[in-house]
Length: 127
Image 1 (cartoon, one colour):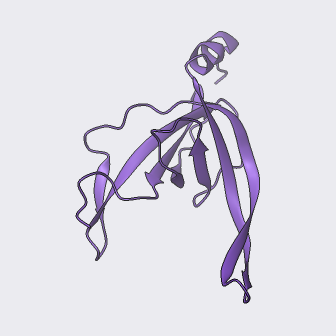
Image 2 (cartoon, one colour; image 1 turned 60 degrees about the vertical axis):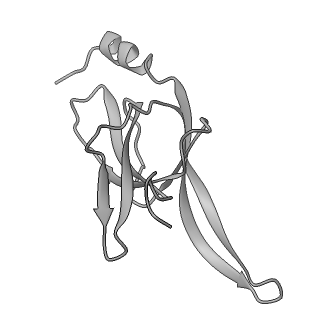
């Protein structure tokens, strides 16, 4: 099935945010400063959209009973190379760093959708 260029252009016009997606690489430890440095590779940088999270997007996680906020992110049609574990930074200050936890791979989509989880606790988590 071929997707109309008009449909793709219309869908991509909704991508009003900017994202950078990086993949963590090797880590090194510096004994003198006790610093751990991790290299990263940029796998995508460009337009994206963050639909508002749904009311069911939070989930409990494991033994520490944290609440993890899930966020979908839309990317342009044909975006490839995104993998589970990649890190997403969005240009908006109200969006915490995110980790990709699922990549949807439907060839009939006008946008590529990835599912992410917040790297910090969602609001309401007791400290």
